[in-house]
Image (tube, rainbow, N blue to C red):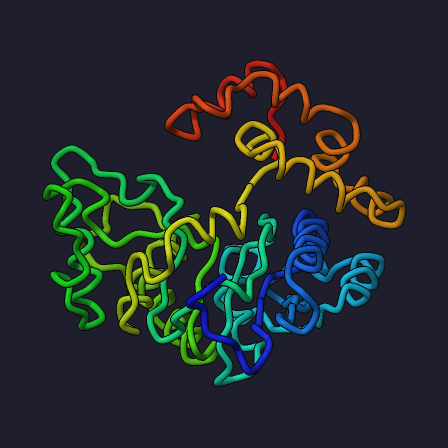
Length: 333
């Protein structure tokens, strides 16, 4: 691919791995990264929360998952849960950033992602961070007689001394959700994980513990990370579309989020890729322990889901996929 600068050092990639679903997704992520990004061009860090008072049970991964991840070249790095833990596991992506080397650019991905292209081809501008635009209008939920989008978002920008006006996309009308900076936190990047992570943490704790009055009608669980992320990105000079459109959440990554959504939405090529990397016996033995992987990848439920939808004419909203699957008894997260 032309016009993409060569990197002197491998790209640092961060995911979170812990007991339960995330450890199996982490293995699948690592397999996909190894299959698409040549050796030496990326370093995968799997951040693992450690046992402590904020977890009801040991959050560490199974030894079998750790062994496979290490054999795939991943570095498992521990971190302490000091502020979120069991009560808000989405906070892992905030607290895990300190486990990466300081002053080295990074890209964070949710574990429920497949890497489908060589990540060293993606022209990240680490000084201008962005995040996934694959989102719906999940927050804020505007209540009758309550604060609108402008009042809600402006209160957050004012709280942290940020310029609200410059964050707006004026091609969308006032009080329409896409006018306001909002991301899915499925990926994000910056030039330093420690500076980004500390600001992410500071903002998140302030919003959680002392929300502006305009948020009185709003739930922050599970939306806290996605409420704060646009503020952090804006504060570092980032914004929308600092990446070429169609690479992440497109040709080079697939944030599937749940197996039935993957089988309903994605191309034959991605399904074939997924099933190929999950086929080796050692991998299959581990991944079969996670029931959604067992049912959809190995026992044919994915093919049943696939037959229900036309990839060329999918429902516009995710609920239009979820609801028919639930009615058919084919939904599983």
